[in-house]
Image 1 (tube, rainbow, N blue to C red):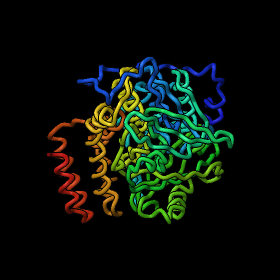
Image 2 (image 1 turned 45 degrees about the horizontal axis):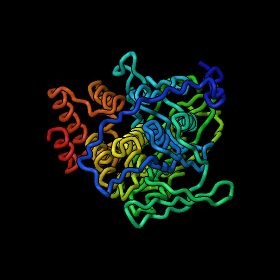
Image 3 (image 1 turned 135 degrees about the vertical axis):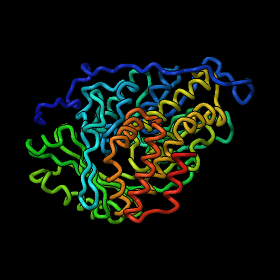
Image 4 (image 1 turned 45 degrees about the vertical axis):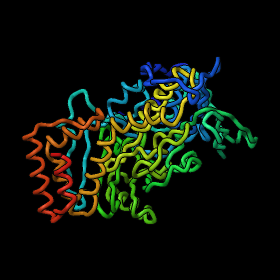
Length: 456
């Protein structure tokens, strides 16, 4: 299909956008007693400000507003979006009711290319007939999710938050200082959800601690039709010291162009050199292309030390919810925002009662950690084992040639659950991994930790 034939969701009239409302999961809160620390609001509704209008913030705002909370959604630049590869897991389409016309491409083939240019086709045989990896543009997704939050009743405030006044008591409001068209304003709220990205101001105001950040850099390149046809349903991942010392580089298809980029933690000062490295690796495939946009953005490498303090909760990149190894963040951003919003609704009984730090930890943070902490730890381990040297990357690509490895990977990625495999196949996979690393002279304590993770 030629790029010109694809529909552009940004030019679709809002009246034609199908905004399907999510049915929130508002279970009865686990409140045992009602005390002075949780006063009834006497006819008023709990007021919650969500700062940041990406997938995390918009999903939180939608859940809050749908649950009866008076919700304010702050977004400083509604017309822009975070630079992002744009891949989402298949389960997100149904779980978050993403309209299919927002999806640019359905990737059914992937290639993983090693430092020596060993290439493995990933998915051509292991993906089921109905499965694919949806690819979209963040500016399209973000605008849709914000519109849906507004439709649910959230008030969108296009404004830059400049300062937060932290209350001196558990019942006093937070005061948000913000600017609208160079005019300074304030807003008093009971609860704040920080969804303002890796450089979160909310996190700084509540002293949530620092974390290590990677940097992602990508160029959007419009290709001639015949070259774009090659990437119609194909994504490529490249590994090697020439493209990143500790991550991977990518070519991801969009509606009428490709995103070519890379990321790194330890080599941030050399990010442009690594970008030239990936462009050199794919030079024949993108020859004749025109760069239409250059983007860079920090990406958190691990959760913050503090994600809830007082009546403030962090979600998405602000909380550090980006996975190692894959660098995935869109789904976990939206999921954490929704879980936080629904947790606030439960704890406040649809906005009737004031909530506390303990409520946020119980209804949001504990639920999040119980559901996803093992996934984050496992992917962190994989990155340490396989991304540390070119020899280990060669072993990674070799292992990815296994259809069983591919099937387990897709089951985990597409459906956001650590896949439960066959014990015998798992054992064979461990020995194959060990053999690959032996051949690459990379056996050590990281490998031992990898085996313990598979067989606790």
